[in-house]
Length: 121
Picture 1 (spheres, rainbow, N blue to C red):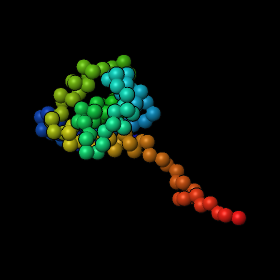
Picture 2: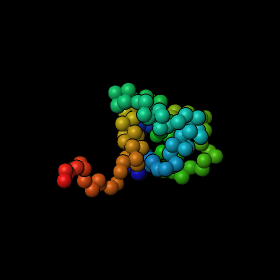
Picture 3: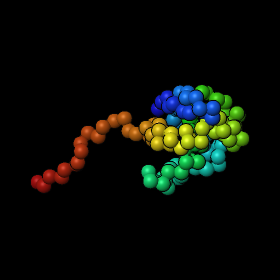
């Protein structure tokens, strides 16, 4: 899934950024941050979203949208990238970042039957 989200930069200007989630998102997250994204996401509830997890997820998804080479992704680059935003912008975008990631994981097919019914003969 790909989506553009407007972000407020450190200087106060607003700019759209592309974010993309795909099959490599969790792999890249683990390579850069040495954490399992799936375990982290499963341990979070909507009331308990971690802003740092959201910012790291946004970094990975933005890198994917920009086709950034894997060799350029690092913790130092993440910190430099995050420093370019207004502090509240990454927090305010948290729900959008997670939605882009989870949107990639939603089923695209409908079940054939809502409930399987057993019949007695």
